[in-house]
Amino acid sequence: MAKRKIDIDRLFHAVGDPTRRAMLDRMSQGPLSVSALAAPLGITLTAVAQHLQILEECGLAHTEKLGRVRTCRIESAGFDALEQWIRNHRTMWERKLDRLGAFLEEDEES
Amino acid sequence: MAKRKIDIDRLFHAVGDPTRRAMLDRMSQGPLSVSALAAPLGITLTAVAQHLQILEECGLAHTEKLGRVRTCRIESAGFDALEQWIRNHRTMWERKLDRLGAFLEEDEES
DNA sequence: AAAACACTGAAGTATCCACTTGACTATTTC
DNA sequence: GAAATAGTCAAGTGGATACTTCAGTGTTTT
Image (cartoon, rainbow over all chains, first blue to last red; front, side):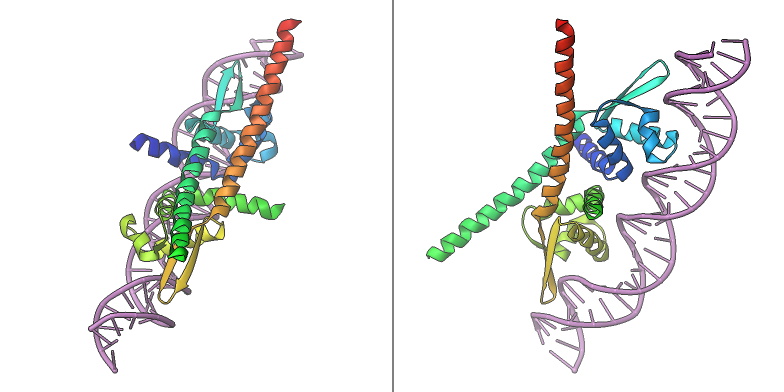
């Protein structure tokens, strides 16, 4: 339970950063090397590597090193968890609205 | 276009904070006053008010002051935009996977 | 009218985190 | 084997931001 909370915490923090979202953007077009990923971002390789680690830690990306080049691709697990959270909150809230609606209708009838 | 980007930026930044997510949690159970919202968080009223402003600015919450009490409720717009972003990225990525699958199948046949 | 209540605003602090530099390792290419 | 390439590690810096305090405003209650 505590672990799950830490995960969702990391996840939202991860997508909260515009640079990391830009990286996800590019990765969703297909796998890339770290340098290719860094090229259009205007920041150092080191910075990109740091972002990558964050994305990996919360299941938004997966990387693999082969020879001297590390290939980066997007991963579904993180996106699943994000969508789940949003869905949960929306449905909770909509259910409440439905109940309110029902209550108001009842009220009108009486 | 620039405006939309700023919005999604603010949105993800907003839900990136655990305190704000806790606030959304409680609000999704029904409308609350600022003090009621603050009570279980162990932070000052001021801090909660600051978080509220952020949530309002990106369409995740809506507040209204009546007399001396401000009532806070969750709002759908923000959640819609978040889900949209996730959906877009997932589908982009899945399409790519499909194409890869098709390519691999072709390759096997030849 | 006084006291209690529910916030609001301005200003400061302290922590976090994105990013840098510079030195290093491991793999290719020539 | 020297040079170029692709990435890694450790440590430091600057700026953002979550939070605080404290002094106010407007609204109920008594």
